[in-house]
Length: 593
Image (cartoon, rainbow, N blue to C red; front, side):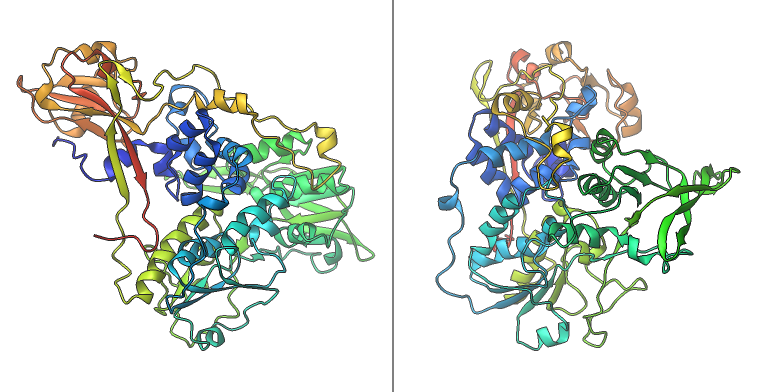
């Protein structure tokens, strides 16, 4: 193998697995250390720059960072990264003097933002300080998009939404709520220099089954029903409720039903429990609230009598796999099952709806009715129209919408300034030694052996009485500190200097995970198998040195390194050093040079 090049931003970025996995590339270890120091406001601002909604995402994020967390490779559970973000939000001080100040003069460019959800708000956050004249449209009377309409208040209090959305709308823009855009062509004809479409995936999928029309009064589309609950148009439901679907929306529907009068609430899913799209913690929360999840049942018919829903008939299925491992569901050979109910909530997916976009304005759509969008620039085939969030590539989650918004803002800024939107700004990086003495570091490199701490929850009986009463109470400061100590500081890198190495193997002897090996070079597959501890995770790179005086190379398996610094402490010549790597994504207005 060739010597590992660590000069560019990507190598060490990939070693900070949590940050690499985050779509917005939030510097996770950085804000966790700040929380450990009690610097909650500083931690909040670190997260605010990248993920825009720390208080919201600290409660609702899908947490792609946590499965990537290195702590999960050395014990059962990762660091509670998401809930620590909430700690920063809950304990921060006044940040008014740290926010961008509305600009005094316009730069002469006008941008329309369609939809006041997380993608559009992120674009606004990035463009407003640059002097753009922004107009934000939304058909609802309050901004926030799906953050406000589809996430129940018992998970996300309205005051948190108001606060963090307010930070953005307060940067100086025209907010036109209750004004639904009915024609993209008409909007473009108003002379905007660019239009960003962040209208989400507002249409819930229906089920065209026998009895659907006859029993329509008690069969509801899940996302529409959640919106009606959020805006207080609906405040009750029948005692017996069936929720169809296995995603996070289904979990929100069933838990909301329990709070609005549902006594016998079931989630019924066509797939297996492990295959459900809902996050593991969402399923756990539903089960904790006495909601059974029944699997491998496919709905066949809505039963009804005298125009009133009486139940749902299901076919029992089982998975069957072909030679390639592809799964299909086949009849299980059991009789159909009938479950009685008063109401059904259908949460089997969401679709985009673009009836307001004309098909003769140079904007091309694919065979599924989705706009053709460049995944790098978020530009459509109409050069001045950009998409992001669920409107661009279908339903995902808030943090992906934020990442789309950042990237789209870069493209809009470049487009409005006549620059090539395909040339993206490089991230800002630093790599600084943490050495304060021969064996002393500027960070705590002794991670705690504690297991993951569980976020306290409100008593179940109390929680189920009020649909607006937040269930999770958040970490207290002391418990949050203990959870921060589980972080392995993966951004503090082990950096190796070949000229100083005398090949004494002291680092090999002291390494607690056997991740360092001095050996003859070879092809990667061969080398991975010859290490002191075979490196089986090919998704993470090997750190390979140049040829040493003995002809050997130093090989470190980044996958299992704990960043404990023992190699650097033990090394008699200083060939190993602990250097903190910080990567910050460059947003709109940043240099590409």
